[in-house]
Image (tube, rainbow, N blue to C red; front, side, top):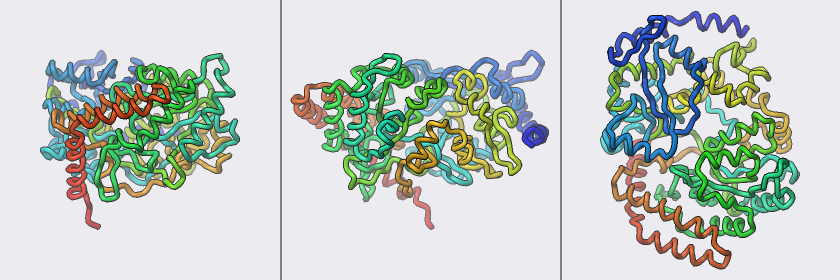
Amino acid sequence: MGVLKRKKLWGSVSLVLAISLALVGCSGEEAKTTTVDGKEVLNISAFIGTPNQAPAQDNRIYKQIEEELGVKLNMEFLVGDLQQKLGVMIAGGDFPDLITADTKLVAAGAVIPLEELIEEHAPNLKKHYAKDWERMKDSSDGHIYWLPNYGVYTGEFISNYYSGPAFWIQKAVLKEAGYPTPKTLDEYMKLIRDYAAKHPTTEDGQPTIGFTTLASDWRTFPLLNPPEHLTGHPNDGGVVVDDNGVASVFADKDISKRYYKELNSLYNDGLLDKEAFVQNYDQYLAKISSGRVIGMFDQHWNFQQGEDPLVAQGKISQTYVGLPLVYDTSIKDHYLDRPVINLNNGFGISKDAKDPVAILKFLDALMDEKYQKLLSWGEEGVDYMVNEEGRFYRTPEQRTEQEDPAWRLANKAEGFYGAAPKMEGTFEDGNAIGATNQPEEFYDGLKPEDKELLDAYGYKTWSDFFSPAPENPVYYPAWQVDLQEGSDASVANKQMTDTSLKFLPRAIMSKANEFDSVWSEYEDAYKKIDVKAYEDRINEQLKWRIQNWTVEK
């Protein structure tokens, strides 16, 4: 059934050929090269601001895109510090055709407005973003600069795999403790303390790390965000928003002091990673992949690369379960949220792109369901099968392949796909967009250890650990507000972050009887910052969103 259907699918390429011919026909001569077999190919350069590994040169999916759409992607992935890299680009005034989002690129005039080009040349993208069109417009000038990469759903929203914020704990800890359900920070820390006392080293003799965190480059949220969640607030970044839609900074408040005092206690007991505040992202991932780390606060998408080697080695017990902790049981957790469009993220087209129309038509072509299935599931009959009811599934062998990082570099287009516009939810045929979201494939594809753990709790998915997501407020999330590069709000935001990164490590690593005095220094330093400018910008934009994004029912 699957193989026959595959032949039929790849035989129906008239639309794709038309798009491909349009691409080649409209691209400028200077944007073309000629391949060995004489076919003209449009070269598109792209900078992707995440430290992905470069795909294999003969990557199967990129090769298929090149052969069918006449486009070759020349991608550069981040090495080192993102802001430093962008600063060099801006200073030099030289940009690739596609570049992943950063608001300073708008301020520098590095990217072009896209709304008119989309209206005229990209019907698939216009349809895809139709419900969020107004949200995508920059509130300062009304232009659309970025093509958001996540949060636009079609069909049914399915949540099996949880990739958001949580306090994570190794599965081995829960199993050894008899599968408890810790609800509070205190209960979670007791689990870590008890397990670390019994297991001071890993099976291969490495010292166990009770808890770690990360505050490197732009990835400061593992250190800075926990207090908002512990008090029952969703992820609004550097603020908590009250029931009236008013945002306020929490970093220097008592709700934060309580959390960091707990980390201070962990540190003085030798259970907090002593390198936590100086490690970079790669070192953090390496530590996780070593199996040494019992727990941490993070978003799953941020540390999954560290888990992948553990999965590939069959060390499932050293991978993680996310827990929605709160300070006390009177607080309802709000970690799981409904999808929101990922504003100020995804690709933009730079001012240096020689043929923006051709580039946009290429991205539009990829929004056809055929290519969305290729990018999310792979090739039918190779990466997945189709049963008699038309449901997509993977064989055990295909699932095993997907777990191998080296295999994925040769057979998936993850680096580009992560930054590109994409469908989420379900296809027209009812199949989920992506294997992890296909309910039956998700559970069937779990490792025996994972099924055992979920069965012990009476759950079927990792999202079941969390309270159901309520409806999102119109303004949500506040962290997507553009502070405007160089503004008082932007300056204050940097000063707040710098101050937190200066004083929080000092407070956490101080002797127990010195914590309060260091915290007082932190509060005094915060009073010298124009926090009000930051809060005013956030609140002005939240109010603007409520006024402009509210849809009459």
